[in-house]
Image (tube, rainbow, N blue to C red; front, side, top):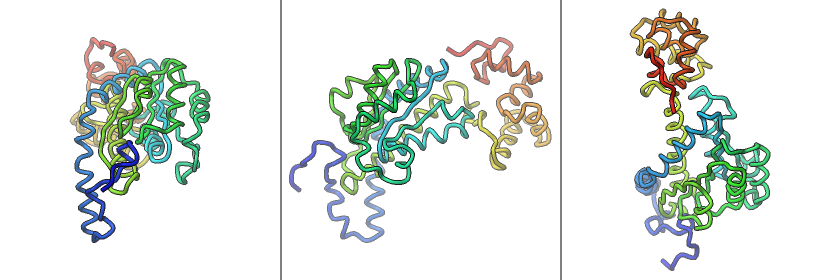
Length: 306
C-alpha cells in the first residue's frame, strides 16, 4: 500500500480491511468487530485526561455552570445525543448540558455541507449562549481539524470558559495549546477510510458517556449505582422509582408508593425521608446542606460537598 497522503490517522487507509469489498457478510462482520475490539483500550489510555474533565464539569455544575459540546457531523450529533439524555437520566434542566452542532438542528438528521468550514458560526454559537467563566466547553472533532470547532473553542477560551477537546487523531499543536485538556483516544484508521462514525464515533461516545456520568455522580445524582434523580415520566421509570425505594429502604411497594407521593415523586427526597424518618421539608433541607449527596444527608451532620 502506498504511503499515506494525509497525516491524519482518521483519513488513512486501514491495511487490514483493504480487501473488504471482496468479503462475505460474515467476514465483514468479523472485520468490523475485530477493529472495534481495540476502541475501549484506546479510551483507557486517556483516563487521566478524562478524569480531569469530569472534575472540571462537576465543579462547574456545583457553581451553577453549564457544559457545552461543540461538533460537526457525527461528532456534533454525538454531543447533542449525550446532552439530550442527561435530563431524563439525572433529573437536570435541559440547559445544564447542551449540544451545539454545525448547521444547527437540520444537521441532526441531514448532512449540512460546508457548515463545519464556517469558523464564524462557531464563534457566534458561543456568543449566542453567553458562555462564560463558570461554563465548560468541549470541542469534538474526530480529525482534530474542524474549523467550526476550533473557532468555538477559541471564543470560549476568550470568554473565560474551561475548555477541552476530544479527537481521535493527534490534533494540531496550536489547538492542544489552546485548550485546558485534550482527550485523544487514537483508534487507528477506520474500516472504511475516513468514516469516523465507526471507531472514532464509538470512542467519542464512550468518552462523552464517561464525562457526563462521572460528573453527575460527583454531584450526587446517584446513590451507589442507583439512578436517584431520574424523572419518572413514564410507566417504566415510575416502576424503577418504586423499586429503588423498595430496595434501599427495604419496604414493600405500597410503602414505596406512599413515601414517593409525599416526596412529590422525587426518589432522592423519598430515600432521605424514609431512611431518616423525617418529613419532606427536613429532608429537603438536609439534602441542600449536603450538596445533594444522599450519603451525607443521611447523617445528622451533613457536610457540604466541596
